[in-house]
Length: 223
Image 1 (cartoon, rainbow, N blue to C red):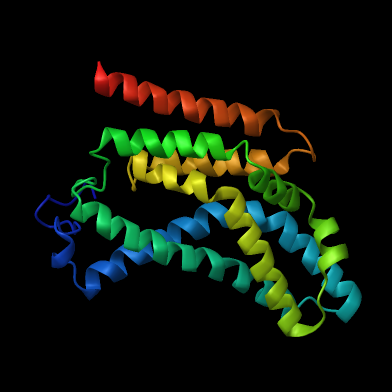
Image 2 (cartoon, helix red, strand yellow):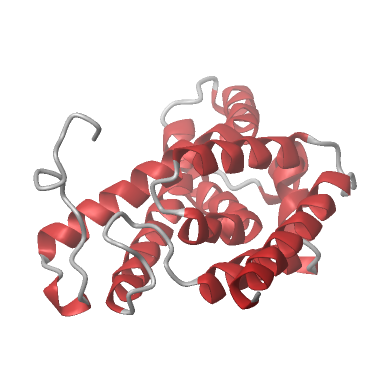
């Protein structure tokens, strides 16, 4: 990007009605790659646990582990499609600039506060405990066969989405292509999921931080 002039770089159209198929494909591909890069590392403990169990049951983890991972990513690729549609509308509302940076302080503050509040909800806690307990999931929800492996990957992906979707929305507040934010969110997800069960200090502290950051944005906007 730094080697190209502004006129040579692809940028999303300002108006929603100006988007064509290639624009949707580019934005979707961007989101799909981001979701895979940000979420796959946190799924490694579950995938390893599934592979070990599959080897015990079938003497080999292939193709079961591949199907499990494929289904997991499919959930995030589906979510990427929804994010693409949302970005399309945000450009139409002029809430995102051509460089895909936030231009609406109220929207950014709402995202941060909503993400912060979500950290304290029961559904967030339930999904987080699932992600922290791979062997418990495998013990209680095991399904045999290739279809079972795929179904289990989809279940894990859906639960992981329930845990982390609000954190992904923060990208709309800080800039869709903000690499620093991508790295920090990824590291936070790894830390949050890597802690022991019922250790809520990091999760709840992040919720407070998100809310305070949203309030800070509102304060700067109004004053």
